[in-house]
Image (cartoon, rainbow, N blue to C red; front, side, top):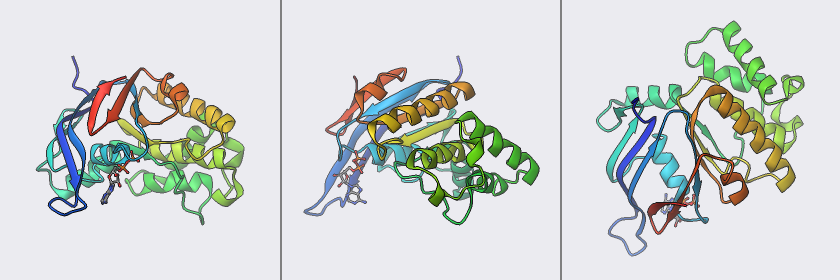
Amino acid sequence: MSDPILEMRGITKSYNAGQANSVIVLRGIDLSIAAGEVVALVAPSGAGKSTLLHIAGLLDVADAGQVLIDGEEMSGLSDARRTAIRRNDVGFIYQFHHLLPEFNAAENIILPQLANGISKTTAAARAAALLSAVGIAPRAAHRPGALSGGEQQRVAFCRALANAPKLLLADEPTGNLDPGTSDQVFGALMQLVRDTGLSALIATHNLALAARMDRQIRLDAGQLSEA
Ligand code: ADP
């Protein structure tokens, strides 16, 4: 059997350790996501979803425990290797799109590929294919300010997939949208993830969206349980 795409073992994380305002956020997280598996991370606000996702995506480091991506242990790697993994192997989507406002939709998807050494022609073709897959090919030349919230978020999905990552991490990817739009935009994300066979960990507190994934896990009081 192939390695899990993401594995977390005994992950703990506190903020302000030893101070009066210290907070223990993660108390020993064990999590395994198989190739092609899409997992919902369900938790109330403040439970530590973002902290967990940031540690999984190498944007933050745990106090203890191990993170393995596609079987490779992340601790002890050089900064250069961690950066390369973060850039090539992990796609991250936030609640807010964080697109570059002075570049159009296609350029926002092309730029991360150029930073990764991909040719301009190949990058442009991939951007066009991704925009088409999420149903907004006609918006390619629009800047984020000229797009609706749902369209902006669809572009952010394409950008996260620009470098064909192995793992997608999403932090309330449609949490900023009204319920009807959220449903449609989430559908576009799921389609994209399924079409590419990506493994994903997607935080949401929308139980209907969580039910559309393969498995639901709950984060509560710093620990995970199967929902
Ligand atoms: P969620 O994403 O589930 O809303 P977070 O991971 O953002 O939760 O935060 C979990 C807890 O950790 C919260 O109590 C939050 O206030 C605290 N926290 C998050 N980041 C920091 C930080 N940099 N310094 C201190 N406390 C933090």
